[in-house]
Length: 446
Image (cartoon, rainbow, N blue to C red):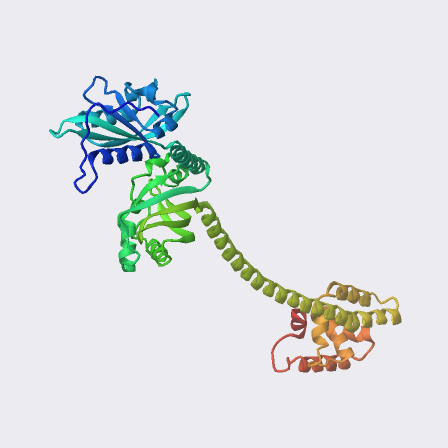
C-alpha cells in the first residue's frame, strides 16, 4: 500500500523506550498498519484539514485506496448525508482541540451505508499547537443494527402494550412510590407509605372511567389516597395483606371512591416492581365489580327474605294442617250427628208411620227431623254419658218439636203417665232435675 508520508514530524513520548526513534517509528507504523481499526491522520495546518495517512483497515472498511482519499477532507465519507446530529459534536471537538467519540453515517466506495464509530485524538507539537488529528474508525454497523432492532422490538412491545392498555376490558394501571418502600420496614410503616407515597403514573381509559374520568391521563399524577381512603378500615386491612404478600395479590377486593364520591368495589391483581431490594412501583389489572357485588348483596337479601318467607309458609302449613285436622274432626262429628239423627230419630218415626198409616202427625215429626238432620240433637241425646233409651230419645224429639204429653202418648200409643215418666228420666239423665230449665227449651238449644 502506497501511503503518503506525514509531512510534519510527529512527537511521541517514549522516555521508557531504549529503541531509537527510527526503530520506534517503524514499530509504530507497522502496528498502525496491522490494526483492525481504521486509522486516518489529517493535517490541521493545511486548508480543509486534508488526509495525509490511512492504514490498510481503512481501505477494507471503506473500499477506498489511499491514493483516492489523500488530500481530501474526511467528511467526503458522509456524502450528501450532512444533516447528522453527530457532526456538531465533531466540529466542536476539532475547534476546541479535544478528544471525542461519535457515531456517524458513512458511505463506502460502492455507496453502501455503514455506521462509523469515530474517535478523534488531537496531536500537538512541542509548543502545544495542534498539528494533526488521528481519526480511529470502527465499523459498528452490525452492533448499530442490532441496537436499532432492539429499539424497534422495544418500541413494538411498547406499542403492543399501549394497544392492549387502550383496548383491554380491564383497568390497567401503575402506582409509583417516591421514595421507594423497603420491604424490611415495619408493616405499619409500609402500609402508611403505600397511602402517603403512592401516585398513579400509568392508567388506561378504563381506569379513568372507574374513577369518574374520561381519559387515563386525567388519573396520572393523582395520589392513591384520593381514591382509596385511608380512613376505611377495609382498605387498611387490604393494604396490610398486600404488604404481607410482598406486594403480590390475586383477586383482591378494594373499596374505592370515584371523583363524584360514589363507592366502587374493585377486583385487583397486583405485581410489584423491585429494584435493589426496594418496591419502586406496582402494576395492577382491575375490574369494576360494583354491579356484581350489588347483585350478590341483593341476592343475599332476597335469599334471606325467601328463607323468612319459607319459615312463615311452614308455620302457615302447620296451622293449615291443624285446620284440616279440625275440619276432619268436624266432618266426622257432622257425620256422626247425621247418623245419630237418622238412627235415633228419623228411622223410629218412619217405623211409626209404617205401623200407623194415616197418622199425619208422625209425618210432620219426620219432616222436622229431616230439617234438623245435621243438628247435634241426635248425637247429644245418644251420648254414652247420657244413655237415653230409644223411647226416651223418641219422647225428647217430640218434646223438642213442641208436642204435648197427650199428643206424644197418642202417637206412641202409650199411657200418659208413661210419657211423663220418660220425661222425668230424660231430665234426670240430662242433668236438669235440680234446674229450672224447661225441657223443650233445653232440647232446642242442642
